[in-house]
View 1 (spheres, helix red, strand yellow):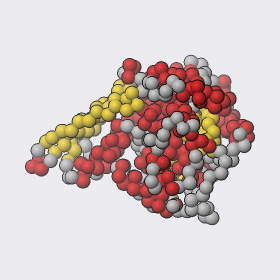
View 2 (cartoon, protein in one colour):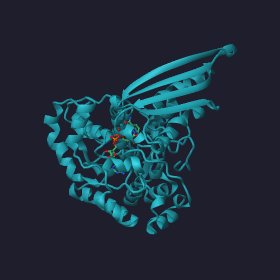
View 3 (tube, rainbow, N blue to C red):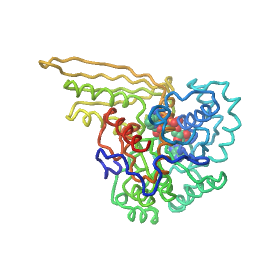
View 4 (tube, rainbow, N blue to C red):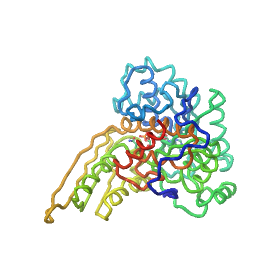
Length: 423
Ligand SMILES: NC(=O)c1ccc[n+]([C@@H]2O[C@H](COP(=O)([O-])OP(=O)(O)OC[C@H]3O[C@@H](n4cnc5c(N)ncnc54)[C@H](O)[C@@H]3O)[C@@H](O)[C@H]2O)c1
């Protein structure tokens, strides 16, 4: 998978040279969302506006709890959203889709928020689906116009989109976040090992060596933007791209947000370890029914997701065990994801017992506050002069970069230790 060069339980990132310890943010922070019309992005955008307008409280945002709230993070009311998507729609229709399908956004809010939400459409442009596979291409129907350009020209056009956004709103800081559909895994080869080789592949227009997520992240790294990889698409943070982020001095974090079943796993598995109960089998069955589910119904895309969901148990427990993760498409569930986990374990005298749990969570409601926390913490890290993989953001990810620890308590302690160095 992507770069694991800093796979240690790193100390909190050192204070950037000459940077303030807990700097106050100034002005408006731009947020560039890849997948801007998706269910998650729409919940992020609407949620930030709703909290800022006093329509909702901050439940779900860890950055609004002690001690993280003592960090000088960007206020939710001072975010400006833009981004890429590939479907022809708009923010208000995306909100209505969520209202209709999932009931997560109160109907009355639209009256209050329609104006600022409608204004975001002019900052959302059609992206690229180069080498994204059939399931993602089918979301759009035809190839976006820019896909006819050379790879180098596509990268330039992505950069120009972000630059235009910054110019229009006089932004000096932008955090980029990938919340687009999960791509099939990109098999890694020489073109991904170093920046020089990747640049050659792009200049030679070798389309099989990239996926859309890589073109976006490469462009963001060229612009020096802090970056968050919230999906399981491995192409986005291949070593060649992280090399460019490092050179540009921009921090990054990923990947695949840990919001539901895997979050529970990473909290429960340490309990078995600490009690010296031997887990023999952990079976997890996930049912989901929204657009994310449609894409994950494709075996190649699902494989990318299962790879990040399945890797944590043996690493937390410290021994191999029988595991299975299934993701099934159940259209009627929409975004109300249901997971059933069966844990078979052995106790004193070799006696075998079992535990089962059912998790019923609304995916976007769980994930949106994580994305908002990550945007604020990545911007904070950038303002502090931090670079490289933000290991202290491990509790937010299924496959955290820069951090070997997979159990939630250890990961959470890393975030608190980091905050303590800043407050
Ligand atoms: N709890 C969660 O919701 C959660 C947790 C972890 C990861 N994720 C991941 O976040 C992503 C978004 O989830 P969602 O429920 O919003 O899915 P969604 O299908 O509603 O949204 C994805 C959006 O990305 C757009 N898109 C696809 N390919 C693109 C491309 N190449 N360029 C630009 N836009 C593109 C689609 O048109 C769509 O609007 C998925 O990959 C999902 O697996 C979600």
